[in-house]
Image (cartoon, rainbow, N blue to C red; front, side, top):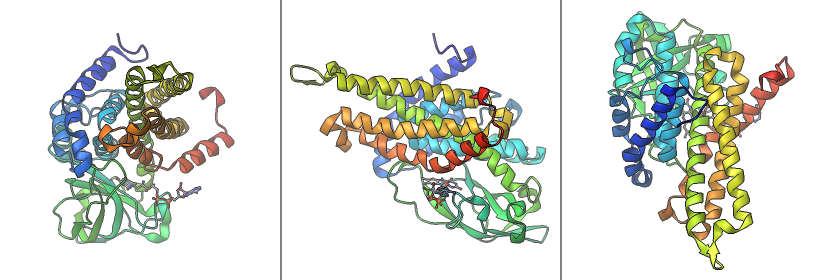
Length: 387
Ligand SMILES: Cc1cc2nc3c(=O)[nH]c(=O)nc-3n(C[C@H](O)[C@H](O)[C@H](O)COP(=O)(O)OP(=O)(O)OC[C@H]3O[C@@H](n4cnc5c(N)ncnc54)[C@H](O)[C@@H]3O)c2cc1C
């Protein structure tokens, strides 16, 4: 029957992608987590099945679907493999979307079909060692020369760094201009001067590679600049707004699995001569988990529906991310608690929910930054009827 707040097409996509990920991505998920193996085949599969670049029009290789449809795909993937979900999220919401929104016809023709088909993976590189939450403080330089630019700097914590085929790199053409000097460039893997650090050894989402991206006078022709000089920071903020909806969906997917696993166990596990699901303390936890899941879903879907309203709805996007990510962490811990000692054992796969959930409170804007975004709007002139 599906969810009444989704269109028939969105419900059909939701059903189809859930079936697909259960049959495919779920199989290798635990093993890839253990070995930190990059799941390139998952991206290829999602491309073949038409789930990459879903909002992009068909003429560029996309599906012409709604932003909400793409958000439903993130949620479904995250419910079985949050590592693939973040690779997917960055590839779609931060890389493909940048080229789609800001690229020239020539740039779209050159890059979008293979990104939407899964033959190429895209990354997003803004963070630097001293420029995290305050990305505007970045210092990677773009010096003009030879009909293009020479990029020099070091980006850290880059999802798919070393695995991706192309990188959206943010650099400044003039550090004295502050955020008005920040400019975006597409750098292709293999360009001379581009190298990568080893994969970071992470707590969770271990199959997603996170690495340093080093640019040592990488020459980028002017045709690989995205948008005008100085527009990069505004573009990054717009893209991260959408990315936050995707991270909220990642949280929702993790919450859904935490609840499902907890319910299955509560129905089965017996202590004191009855199933633990008969104990009120367990019931209360399950009831709260289900209520939060429902709320997080509605917030995330509403945010996705309103994506096209752009920065005007930044508060809703931030609220969805803040709520879903913090609840995902809490619910993952609840799921461990409901499983007792077994929940703490790697073999059971429940502890992984917590390891994978934690980062949703950190990347694409920490919870602290989400609260700043929300509160600053509230204190300006926020229309409370919007909430
Ligand atoms: C697994 C992973 C993948 C990532 N992938 C990417 C990627 O693909 N591309 C990319 O560019 N970046 C990526 N990042 C970077 C990520 O976006 C940053 O880590 C994040 O924005 C926080 O920056 P920071 O780590 O420098 O923390 P900091 O900004 O140093 O923050 C440290 C602490 O201070 C708090 N804080 C900072 N400023 C304030 C303030 N004004 N008020 C109150 N508290 C504040 C923060 O909330 C946090 O608790 C990734 C990070 C991780 C962990």
